[in-house]
Image 1 (cartoon, rainbow over the protein chains, first blue to last red):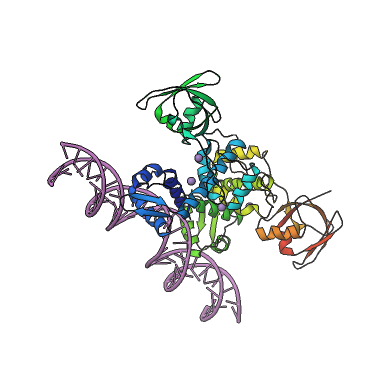
Image 2: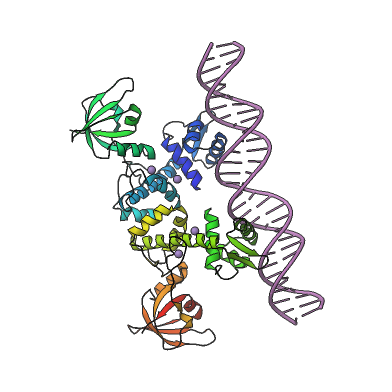
Length: 217
Length: 217
DNA sequence: AAGAATTTTTAGGATAGACTAAAAAATATC
DNA sequence: GATATTTTTTAGTCTATCCTAAAAATTCTT
Ligand SMILES: [Mn+2]
Ligand SMILES: [Mn+2]
Ligand SMILES: [Mn+2]
Ligand SMILES: [Mn+2]
């Protein structure tokens, strides 16, 4: 297993490859490599039985591939907790350093680090940390866009793209914060949120889709 | 700069490449790669002006190469302190994980980690941590083999090979411990040490050469 | 100083990973 | 249903890193 293969499996997972086929096109966009390189990597992972492949359709993770992807995500997220809680990183800063460290961490190191951090359940943007064996704990949060007007909710998880996190920092949206959904416009229109402290925030539909919440009360 | 080149420069440094020429043979042994691969890497590093090369004699670090080697050693040793002090590693366990992490650490990460650790001066086996700019603080310790009979000394630094550290663990030799050199046999013979607590320890000449001490009193 | 032994270099390959350009297949449009 | 567009695959290169085997240079032995 090389860093490249690991990142590739992770990308497939993050594009939904546990349940659906993921197209080469998507991987080209996500990994910023050429289409030819995607085909090539597919061939390699296929030979190792980490993915299944339907020509001209896309790839899906096998059990084995899924386990490796989740173990990498576990490493990534444990590092993110460390960077955030011990080294004082902002939540938008953790991702890129964790993306390198995840490939340079022995299993033993990660288990010791996990204990040092108090066996956290979530990373700094609310992503659940997979178990050591590559399985994932159940979570029960829904995209903000699925809420109906008047709903009370708490922020549980947000997408981990650096610019998006910066945007949320600017909008003062953070994990655990509670809001009421005052208004949601049709045709993928903007959402108006009202915090318990009273201030109102308006965000677009696309951004709201990247925010997972849990209903309260 | 790639992990391989970094490790290569570090190996040259550790073989004395700051002051003397280091032979290909030495690098073959240290890095466990073929002689052909050493020649090849030399050519690459030469083109980047990180080393100077005297054909059939060996290589030395340039200013630039030395700076990179020291910055890598800084990363390595700061990680070793972390593994030892925060994650409870024994001093013989830290090396291999640090050897991977050193290549996956941004400068920012290392500076934050350094502050988190309280800006340590030495790594777990007494190696001095180079400065951020790639320079090295002065130290003033000598190989145990240079001491004369009757000398009182304190253990300051030991070689960082895993088996050697295990051996020292077994011999109950650790940093800061004070001894008297009771006897030193000629012709590279064994040394007899007496700890302040009274127990005597006999070690061979080769091992003693890997232990740096500071005279006390 | 000649021959033996050692060390370094050269030559020729292999593999992983990434690229561009062109061909082939699938999908969308009219 | 024919044509145009998009996506995927194939073909041909490139770089980094590693190897083995053979040649060349140096050093050691007698
Ligand atoms: Mn992340
Ligand atoms: Mn990564
Ligand atoms: Mn070390
Ligand atoms: Mn290393």
